[in-house]
Structure formats: C-alpha cells, structure tokens
Image 1 (cartoon, rainbow, N blue to C red):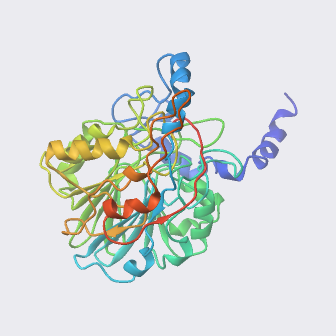
Image 2 (image 1 turned 180 degrees about the horizontal axis):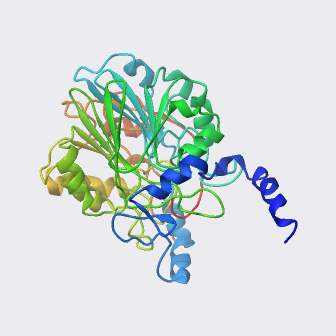
Length: 409
C-alpha cells in the first residue's frame, strides 16, 4: 500500500499516446454537473446495451465462417474519385456541398464556411499502427491539400472517429474544434490548445465563423483505453448557417430523439446518417439502413425532405455483414420511402438537391462474388474500370486494399 500512490503517475506516463487522456480538474467537475451524467457515467437518452449480447459461440461461428469473412471485404480494388481537389476549388453554386471522404469523414461547405466531420486520415482505426482495421481505400485527397477548414467536429472518441495522427496534423493549423463534453482532454494531450476547443454538452450551441453548431443527443457509448470510464460524451451534430442546415449522426442506435432534434433544429437540407457496422449482437448502438432511413424521416418531420448521405460504411471492416450490404439496404429503404439519397464514390463532391447528385450503386462492380465450389474455380469480381458506367461522371481511380477484421466500432 505504501508504494501504490507514487506508482500511479508513472503508470499514467506509460499510457499509449493514442489512448488520449482522462478528463480531470475543471473539465471533470463540469462533467459531473452535466444533467446527462449519473452514477459515475454518461447516460444514454434511452437504455442501450453497449456490450455484444447473445451467444458468443454463435457469434464466433458467424464471424469466422470462411464465406462470411470473404464477403466482409470487397472483391476488387475500391475506387476513389480522381478530381476531388479540382472540384473543391470551385465554390458550390447552391452554397452547400458535401464530400464524403469515407466512413464518417465528411467535408461540408456551407454558406461560405468549411466544416470537417470526424476526420480519419490514418491508415488504421486502432491505437496501434501495426494492428487493427486497415483502410479498404485510401483517403481521396491528402489532408494538407484540403486548405482552410473553419471547424473540425468530432462526434465521439472511438478510434474510427477520433484519429490521433489526423488530430496531430490538424493541431498545427489554426482551425477550431467542436467536441462533446470530455473529449477535449484527448485533444489537449495531442497538442490542440485549450483556446481552440469548443466543448459542448447535449443541446448546447456555439458560434463559429457565422455558423451555429449544436451538440445533440445520440445513443452510443465512448472509450479509448483499457478502462472505459464513460467520462466522455458522444453526440450527433447540427450545423446551421444563414441559408442551410445539416445534420451529422455520429454513431447511434435508433431512438425517438431524432424527431425531437428535427422539431428543434430542422428541417435539414442534408443529413449524414450512420448505416453501417450494425449487428443483431449490438442492436442498440448502431443503426441498420432501414433504421437510418427512419431516422432521416424523423429528422425531417416525417417527410422525405432534403438529401440523406449514408455514412459509416465501405471504408473499414467493423461488423459481420457483407461489405456492400449497407449500400444496398439504404438504396432499397430510400426507394421504399420516396426519399432522396446521395451515393457518392469516396471523394466525390456533390450539392444536395442538384440534378447531378450521385445516386447510382457505384459499389456493385467491386463486390466479391460467390466462392468456388469443390472442383470449380471461384467467380472473379467484375473488373474495377467497369464501375465508371454505374458511378456517374468522371473516371474512377481503383486502389489497392488489404483485408482486415475487427468487431464493432
């Protein structure tokens, strides 16, 4: 007992940098005063199981089944859009343009300002550079080539949304960061000055460069280190300019709060909705494509208003479902609801509501086909160049990939 106290600071010093930092001092006191913090942890707006449920034996049988494993990865090189920077050099005619960089990373140009959501430019969403889920396609453009970003918005502190190498690169710029309560501790450890942080609880807002950013509820969880203390909040985000409103879901399970967010802040010109990395083993913390479409409609007051951009899919292998299933499910859900969706190739800028907004299933030429039967060769995926006809204008640039496996996000 005598030597235990002096050891703790030394153990904290050995903590991997990617684990970030635990909130302390005034930040921790603010967390404890939050109406969303009780019994020592942040609480979800409705109950949620944050650990995999059901039989782990049955889950393992599904997860490690050879055919299932193959289908969780594309069967050919995943394309990225080749002329992203050239198109971003021109201002959007409507005043609103979105560029999906893969997974949940989106550059939003809104009313003359630039907002970067959940930027993950690292090669793996993991605390370690040598292990963990590896990108199935590279980022479409170098981070340094994007130019000025007015504000970086972070939804929560999981590795596929808060990326150490990306934040350290952005720390050297003058951009501001809007983050959920507690997440600022990570960013300060990584070199972001406190005066560039705007740390919000649910339903709090901040003004940045003429935009109003509001942290809104989500149904998820948090944590980066070996011990998950639930001392950092997770959030969805509303960004409102003079002429446009947009919504980014972060990670979330479906819950009735979407209608409340829409009533308070909508309708939205565009919503960016999580529709991937779902499973029946964690049904409360991620949405299926059908639930994602339902959330989009709730946010729009029950009407198929605006454009939905599906996010959190296609870039990292994080769940047991086939690689292409989130895209196909979203396409079917949109047709059933009569809702407008955008289906851009990673890096393809588009203006929501424009006649040329991408809406074709670009991923189909890259889907792995059925495995070979005994004595017969496997059917190959269609060659990558065939995607151009389905993906819309421009010539796609196929890139290499590496298989990767993990569970959840």
